[in-house]
Each structure stands twice: as structure tokens, then as C-alpha cells.
Image 1 (spheres, rainbow, N blue to C red):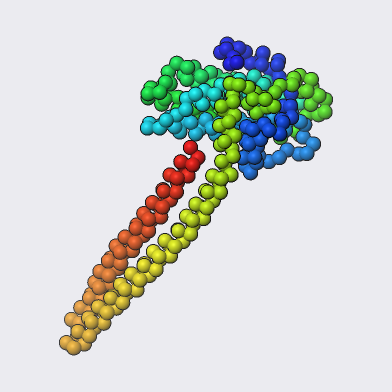
Image 2: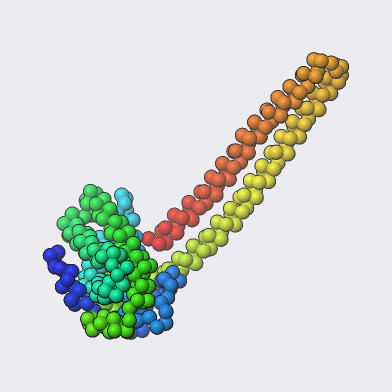
Length: 343
């Protein structure tokens, strides 16, 4: 199912495919991912946008859900954690198979027609077409490492695998953002009806082996994982929102308590300083005012204020540090729990 490393991109482009067939209602992975990503999906295309643009954007959401899943497994490649290397291989294997054999060639076909119609797009299109080749190279690199080196207990292999996974995820996400942010809008604006007809003429009908009408046997475990993860997203977001509100309330309460304590320190220190000043003045008054008292009283007042101010600063710093520690500990507990939910 996976292409050999020497297969050319031109062959893939010649087999460029058309829009994805309608999914049946029960297609678990596709429908679950659509539900989970609806709140963060990219801005909808115009109602009259060509069907292939709708299809390409839907496939981008599918790819993004797999990159998220790969990122979670990459986090498990850290020391002391237990990665599911079979899941990593399933994800990368799919990304090396369907998007590279079907999604990218369709984009290359679209880009080729756009570059003829819009000369200003040629430079960025060249970058994206090279990006397709780079994504394929990086997919093969990951698969080769998974097949040969990254066995459980192979710390060096797993460090290398994590590095390659993180680099792959970042590159793929940047690539999709560039397509959707700059090239897809230009295609929608610049291409004419006959251009879209040419795109359709060079396309063929293909069913997605993971998100399509029927999940292939080799992707059933991955489909189940994506469905389960997607259905938990709503619950996880709700929990995160509750924790966020609790954190805000706790921050307000903690901040109010600390503010009241600081206000009490300032009041106490000010009263103590004023009392010392009054005592100094009263003592000099009893001894009789003169040149000596004119020097001693201000010095005593300054010394008292400085002493109480220094003590007050230390006490206030201790209150602030304690409040910060209490709030930080509370947040740390919440983040650890949320991370456990999302892993």
C-alpha cells in the first residue's frame, strides 16, 4: 500500500483524483472528526466555491486530526512514557498513502492550472509543489525508522523518532496553512469555469480508505481511535472550561486575600512608624527643644520610617510569594489532570 521511495511525483499527478464521494451517515471516523473540529474549522468558502475546494479543505481537516494524534504519540516518546509505535506507524502510513497518492496530486493539478492563469502565484506554487515532495520524503524517513530502529527500549531511536515526528508535524501544518491562507483563495478568485472543467477532467473518483464510505481493514484501529478521541473532545473542552472558571475564581479569591493582608501590613507599619515619630517628638519636648533636638528628631523619624518600610517590604514580598505559590500549585494540579484527560 505504501509507495516505494523511488516513485515519482509526476506519476501521482497523472493519477490526480476528484472530489470525495458522499460519506454514509455512519462513517465513524469522518463524522466524529467533523463534529470535533467544527468549532475550530477554518473560515468557510463561499457558497459557490467549486466542489474540489470544499473537498480539499475537508481533507485538510482530516489530515489535521491525524497530525494532532501523531503529536500526542510524539509526546509519549519522552523518557518514562509508553508510546504506541504501532499507532504512529498507522498514522504515518496513511499520510504517506492516501494524501500523497490522491490529495497532493489533485492540488498539484489545480496549482498547475492556476500558475498558467495567475503569474503572481507561480513562486508560492513552486514552494508548495516542492513541499509535497518534501512531505513524501519525510514520511518515508519516519516509516523507515519505525521499521528498523525505533523498537521499545531503544532510547536513541525513540529520541530520533520524536525529533522527526515533531519536525514532520510542524512542516505539514505550515504547508496546509500556506495553501489555505494564500493559494486556495487566489484559485477561487482567478480560475474560470473552463479551468475548473480542466481540473475535473484530470480527476478520478476515489474513496478515502480511512475517512471514506468504507474503512479499510488496515485502518480500522486508527479509525476507532480517532472516533473515540473526537467524541471525548467536547467533554474535555467542557472540563477545561470549568477548570478555567475555577482557576479564575481561585485567582480572584487568592488575590483578594493577599490584597487584604498587604493592606493590613501597610496599615500596621504606618501606625507603628507614626507612633515612633510621636514618641521621639514627645521625648524631645520633655527634654526641651534646641539645636540638638532639631537634628535628633528628624533623624529618629527617618530611621523609624526606613526601618518599618524595610520590614513592610519583606512582609509584603512574603505574602505575594505565598499567594503566587498557592495559585501556581493549584494550576499545576489542574494542568496535570487535563493532560491526563487528553493523553
